[in-house]
Image (cartoon, rainbow, N blue to C red; front, side, top):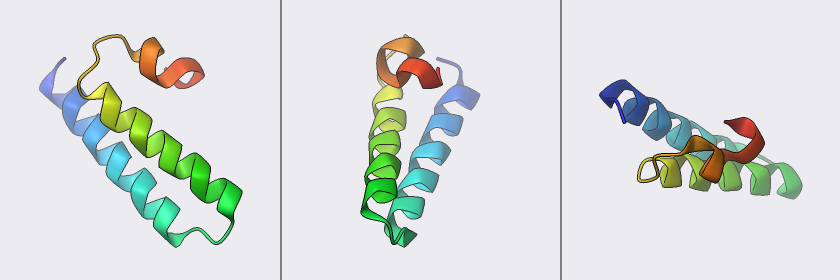
Length: 56
């Protein structure tokens, strides 16, 4: 994985965690948390479709 890919996924994971923290709606918060987990997992997985599914 290219360095800029790693930086992107790390940045997106951080953004999603922050959005989850600020979210009042529990369903939306759960989605943000899940996306943060997926971006974090992508940092160690080479195939984006495996982790991100439709978001790849």
